[in-house]
Image 1 (cartoon, rainbow, N blue to C red):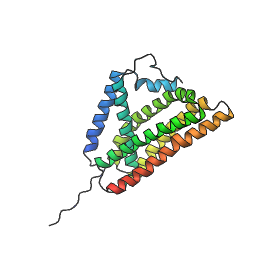
Image 2: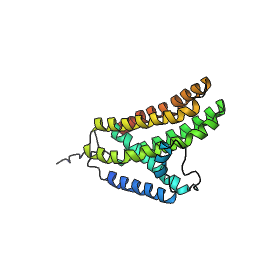
Image 3: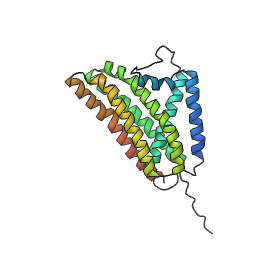
Image 4: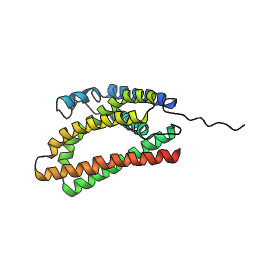
Length: 218
């Protein structure tokens, strides 16, 4: 008798629990190694301060751990938004993580090209800290949401929930980052160029490539 293929959904995938537990450890350990890397990110947003832990020494391993946390949480959120049918596999999740890292590298190269062409590194330098805080906070907010979405197992709910978080933090970032760039007509052009090249285009590419990757692996 032929074997019946068993479809593993997000709700029944065992690897997600171990992954989220490992990511929680990464976040806790990062906060332990560098005080304020997570907790004071919220304070920096509320107080309009770019970095409230500026005088604290930067720990290399804390930065590595928090980067792993960010990448994996965002990749898992994208996977839940793109997943429609088939087996919810760790291989597809790992592929999306690879896509995200690749896009981040491309983003860094585009950043360098824009800086080399238009010479506004001083703007990016002052805008980076609030952006990094936004990404950290968005990842922390997405963590419990992903826990719920894995049990609900609904693509529509996942897209609305993750989309709402993305829009909320993008609006906050536009307000914080826009004040740095929009100081003149040229600054408005720079900000629009930055948004199209380094924000909207990578997000669209990540979603599109993740959807193709999931279909190919399934």
